Length: 168
Image (cartoon, rainbow, N blue to C red; front, top):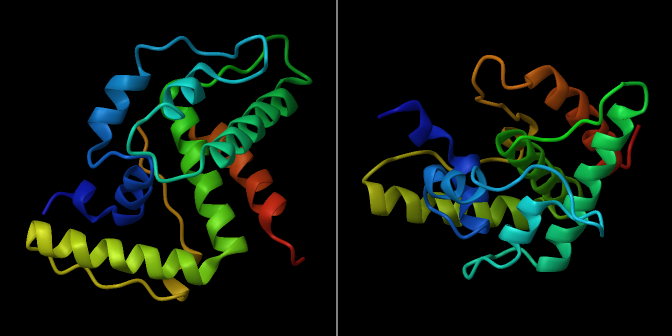
């Protein structure tokens, strides 16, 4: 089985956005302009909130979008040029934002929903990926191309973690 088929958390979050394949989501977002409208909403978010199979409340998606803009603004404070996310960077940050929100605010729901997704995924694809345990949720990995901005994304992930983590 290909590595991307093992990235179940990725597929789970894709499913929350109403997609079964990353390429389909990619095709929708890669043609859009980077940046924000006059209300501060990203053009990517405009596209996501109109998706017919979206399983995340639209107001949540708007909150995530606002947070991602705030991270760009923070990073841009001491730079000559404003940070503008490419679609794949935006998605990496959005997926992390969704994960951290679930993990720190409703871990049991995340675990149950993820394991239900795995059962369905296994039966549809004739795979035997093990169910997640709470310990498994403590690991988050990124699979991004060389030159895609992983250090910048990881910097923001640090902020995301502490935004959602209530404990020291």
